[in-house]
Length: 297
Image (tube, rainbow, N blue to C red; front, top):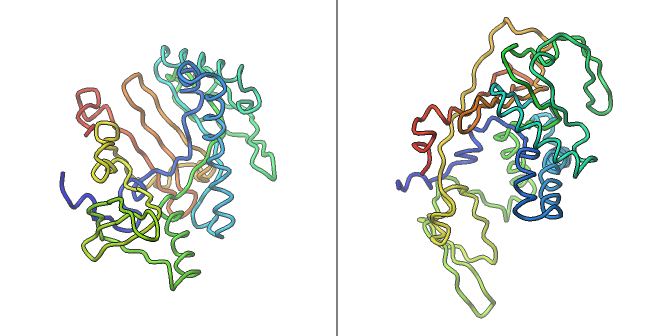
């Protein structure tokens, strides 16, 4: 494992190249969670996941970075090319809607033919409900179907840097941001002042009562007990300029897609609402070969 992996810059790694989906797994996993943990705990997990977009919107407003961070609600489409996977998705959705009707009321499944036809449909984004007269989803007629609901999207890099910039301005004397300064070790120690952690870096040691491990998949480098439990999975993402041929109604950053084609993993697509309206395309897990095993570890 190369030491350079931990020489982190500002919002390096996953956040730097993330496509910006705020789309936690809900109906996909509810039945599994219910079977493993019981209905009450599964419902708590669902509500926690659903709170993410509301919380991100609240934070962006509070920090006055809403426009720059592009945190927003979007129409979300899970697109299924495989009829077998679509039937399973419909079953999972109905299970969730039966147990949690209030939380799942804006979720619907639509057969492929209906999802690709021109029709009127309502899009509710407070404070207005908009009637759109466009091709409903603009999808290929070859799809098996979609699950349609609301979700969120953001520009993760701008969201993180916006908050950090505010902290640096508000607390110039006691907030320090050290980029490219790897943590080489974390040790627990007891001092006369109480239990403290010793955080070791090439430029010195920091004593603190609390440590937040933000290295995601690399956390086991510093926490050996997490090895074999948390490990890296390589993902891919590209930002592509759409050119001038997309209609103006497409270029609003108000929709996101996840595509399931029957293989392991999925591909996703969202679009920036401003600038050149870049298409943020990610996934490609199965293209790594060996059913994605080559991307793990």
